[in-house]
Length: 190
Image (cartoon, rainbow, N blue to C red; front, side, top):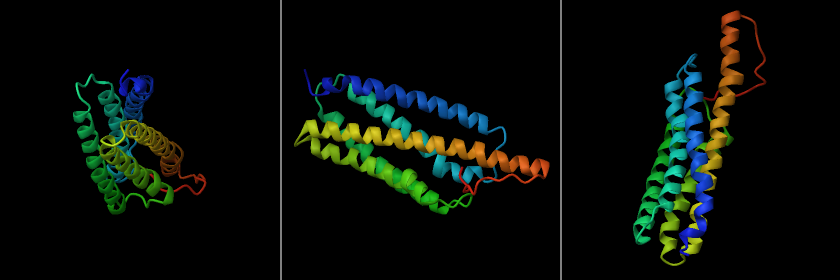
């Protein structure tokens, strides 16, 4: 049994979960498109698109780990590349979060949309270097990074959907009827 064979069940669970959640996110975006909020395009690049990218990364890593590699060297290089590109993408996302004007991100947003994805991609990158010394630890680190990215993306998708349903829709109904509704002090998220 190779070291990767031990991870078969883990990636058979994580990969399809990410794939299903990608599909669900597309359904939600389609439903939200019926009544888009103002400046949604500005915030989408900072909040919605990265969520889909993170789900896709988890799905890709799950598929890559299960491929019948002749040698682990290409997998390690690809994993390092995913980590390096992910670090750049996470930094770009944080820059977009800062620049967009549709919403002022709070601590939770910076943590879940910026810092935690950056940590996850940094772990992917570090795992590539760790693999040469200890493959078992590298595989555990990669699995941890995948789970972190999956859970962060689930949080971010839920956060965006709940904000759209509970805050934006309520505000649109207020605009349509002229009656004030209490949004519970919710912030302005897309």
